[in-house]
Image (cartoon, rainbow, N blue to C red):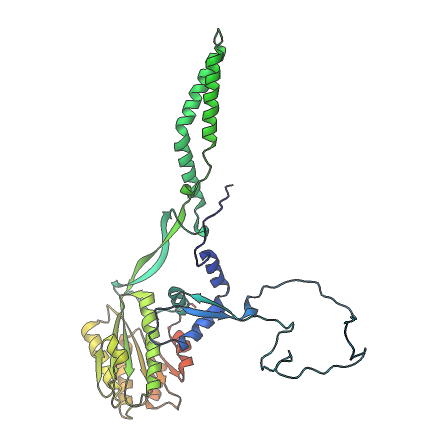
Length: 423
């Protein structure tokens, strides 16, 4: 059995293998920190990683030690105030350490801060969108969406120790040793045959015999100096992200920008759509995204205008649904596209318009959609639009509705709407 020792120096980021092992071991704590970080970050901050904190108690290694046991008495020098049997009052102040602070002290008077480390942008997004997918995705026409799958892609000469290909490395070693020693071994065999002939020849030729023996010893030394394994022989498994053709899909983002949507409510809606947009672009390639803003009138806009435009007005929700229905019929045939929609509103709508929204959803949009999600952003009681949409839950299995009350609810609601069915 061969033994490989990797003597290459680690980079400034330390061992990649150890880092991946650490991320796997404390995955639950890291995912909780990532979920909390979503609420703190700017809605457009996607270019940076994140500082992750893990409580020291979660990374403390278990230890075994002998307990003192039994009843013990100790004599402490310098005591001139107490005698055996006296009772001492508990120290006053915050916690149990006798200080003036409000925190709790550790039992032994010592402690450590939480462990903080930095994860990269890719690690952050991978953890953020793990176990998420577009529900009910069907392969209607395989030509546009590309999902990425990590597959084996041969071998390479550089890599991390965990990816070393032992069999291929030994094959390279054998080929190198054969190429470097084949000629020497052939010459060695000829010299040994010649030496055997001279030793049997009469009269003896000691000078020639000595010369051949020296050449044989030199050849054997050169053959034995060829190393069994060399850094040139090492081969590592290569992994590549290859595109996997899948079905094409379009996501409609419908956002209410009416006057009843104050700035805080709009900010929550934008945060939700940023998460959705990041998820789509991270997980799939070439997914069509249609942005629709509406007040009394609906308008298809680009990404920049969707997030930054200041236009506002009254509220007619059906205008956005009608525009979506028109775009679907004109540009996205139902038999060729997987159609998704995410609608965000505070629920404030004209009373006579909410039944129209329910009819549009029931008759036109839900039959054409793979999945339609409605997010109502409000802290008060639900209004007519929510109550009308509730009637669709019983008859439609491709419709979901959730309520977001604060920023802390954004990511949990998002994960619940787009979690994998097998997760």
